[in-house]
Every structure is written in structure tokens, then in C-alpha cells.
Image (cartoon, rainbow, N blue to C red; front, side, top):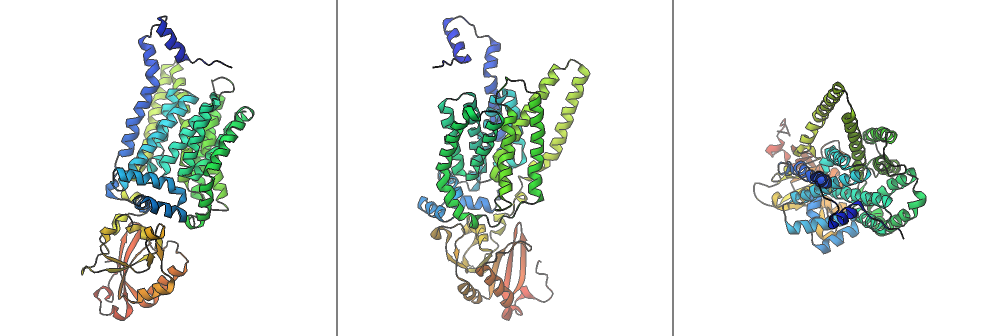
Length: 526
């Protein structure tokens, strides 16, 4: 049996016996790491809560989160059996959050801000474990400054929470490599299960950790423990993966194969990470065989995203937010590199070279701020998202106050009215057969094509809420019928463009001549 006595235990023993006096400098050293972590809390909250309301705007994905979170627990259970099981745990957490305080999508954005805060603190903890508290602090600040991190810190979706769970799982993984007690492996497994149930692609971090074991020469000593944890986590998330696989075609059919933008978005940070990792490895100062920042950070950024991109050449599943947690790997490398540069500058004895180094640092900071500053502002504007649900509120209310015939093209654009249906006034959703809540779906079930055709032809005027021209069109019998009936029997007389879509008015051709909206020569966009 090996006896483990930590430095803090020894210090407490000596203090109790009066053989050691705690000097002010020792107290400062003891609280220094905690003070850095405490400083991150207001910093992350300031960044996260800055313009969190986004001028009262929300977009369709956030509307889904809010609308589903407002459903009852039986309705949630019904939904995940049909669609979106991959987000089932997040919807349950959203349900609880909205039960505590229903502030609309802002409530769920607050949850994401707290998730980002947890991820920032986790990055600090990992960096402190692998290097020192200053490296951890700089890594946490770098993670917070990543544009994608700030973007999803203010999204009513699950990705900030997934990042927090994965980052803290990585901390437990590092602790387990440094100290193989079972509690670290147990904590590692629990957090992997939580992350996997929030989003199953979170388990791709296991591949990154496997590379860390391999590159660090620890497969023999720790590989079997890691394999047990990976097997347990995989088995625990397995039922979700099976259900989600059956729903994948309905959920991810909008995705295309990765293009140049996706590959560049992966390749540029990966190249930076590899260069930083090699530089840090050459200048390592820790004991031989220790777990290094490069061994953890480089695989964390590259492996999950690279694997998902490669798979997407066959099955398009890649979206950068699915592996947002990988940015913590890049942040760890940046933090360690900045700390190494700081130490080198402090060791420099030539005052002129120190001044040049400081000027270079200030210049680099100004360049980064000038590039990222406008982006940080832009992502907090309503126009930064694909659409704005509030653009449609009140546009479909008729002057007479009666039920207005409304059609959605495609059917999933019904999402625009899910969160606040009362704002649309009385509507006759002529294609809808079963509501989202009753059908256990996100957007409801539409009637057969013949029924849709019959219902449409009963109306002289139809308001169509649709995508902007040029967007891919769903090639389903119901959508084909909608387009055919509108083309053959109706005239487009009025278009109101809004962010991410259009509100259009169609008039029956046999009555269009008498309708002032369809006057010859009139600009339909006026």
C-alpha cells in the first residue's frame, strides 16, 4: 500500500504543531489560483450577459427550444420517441428552467451563459493542472474570446452545456492520468454520460483522449481503465444513439457535404494548434513523462472535428457547433504559449528587448481587437441569425378579424409561430392535420396532398409564409402540391420580405382582376 501525503496536508500538520508560521507571501501564494478563477466569473458573466436579449429577437432554433420546453412531461416523452431524441435531456432541462422562470428564450440563454461560465472555469482548471494557474487563466480567457464560444453562449440551445460537460470530463481525465485513484475515473465516466446524453457527438472526445494516451505512452498503464470507462459511457449512451440513428434522416436531411468553408474553418485552427503544440513540446520544462498541454490540447481540437468531417463525406453530419468543445483544446495551447512568452520576457535582461516585446504584444492585441471586435458586436444583433421570428408577428392578422388562411412553405417553417401563436391572431392553418403537441413532432403533421389541394381551393386569398427565393425546396408530395396549386390557380400580389423569409399574399386568378392588390403594373414589393 502506497502512502500519499500532499503538500497541503503536510503544511496543515506543521501549522497545527506550531513548527511553521504562515507568512503573508505564503497566504498570497495559496489563494492566488483561486483569485484567478474568481476573476473569470465576472469576466465571463459580463461577456455572456452583454446584450443577451438581442433587442427582443429570437430565431427558429431557439423557438423550438422554448416551445418544446413549455410542453408537459408526457408531451416531451412523446416527442423524443418520434424526433429530436438527441436533444431530449436538454429539452427536459429547458422544461425545468422555464418552470422556475418563464422569461421566454432569454431564460434558456441564461442557462447557456452559465454553461459557458462552467466551461471557462473548466478550461482554467485543466490548464492549471497541466501547467500553472496563470496558463490556466490565459487559456480560459482565450476560450472565452473564441467567436463561436461567444455565439453559442447566447443561444437557447444545448451546445454551451455540452462544452462544459466535456471540458470538465477532460479535467477528470487529466487528474486520472496524474493520479490513478478510482474516483477520478468514476467522475470522468459520469461526466461523459451526462455529455453524451446532452448530445451524443460529445462522446467523440473519447477519440481525442485515446490519442492523448497513445502520444503520451500511457496505453499500457492507463489504457485498460480508459477502455472500461469508454465502454460504460458508450453502453449508457447507446440507447440514445440507436433511437437517434433512426431519426437522423428526418433531422439532418438539410445538411450537405462539407464545403470549402467548413474545411477551412477546420484546417486553419488545426494548423495553428499543431504549430503551437510542436513549439510547446520543444520548450517543455516539466518532468519527463508528464501529461503535457500539447498532448491534451491538439487532439481535443483536431480529432473530434476531423473525424466528423471525414464521416460527413459519406453521411453529412458535420456542423461546427456539434464539436464546439474542441475549441477548449486550442485555448489551452494559446494559454500555455502566452505564459511561455511571458516567462521568457520576464527573464530577459535587456530593457530594450523587453520594451520591444511589450510593444509587439500591444500591437498584436490591437490587431486582434480590431478583427474580432466588430464580430463580437455583430453576433449580438438580431440580423446575426438566420431569421427573426418576431418579424412575422402581426403580419398575418386580417382587417376583418376573421380566421386567415395561412400556408407554410416548407412545413417546418411553422416553427415561426410555435413560441408565441397568440401574436399571429386567428389563423386557419389549411395544411395542418395534427398539431405539434398532439402528434409528438416539432412542426405537426400535414394533411395528405389531395386534402391540402381541396382546402386551398376553398379560399380566395392565402397568406404564405415561406423561405426566401433561392433556398432548397422540399421535394415531398405535400410541398409539390402546394407549389402546383399556387402556380396554376393563384396570382402572387404582395410580398413582405423579412429577415430569413417572406410573407406573401396570393389571390385566386378568377378574382384577381377586382382586387386592388393585383392591379396591373403594381410593384408587389411596395
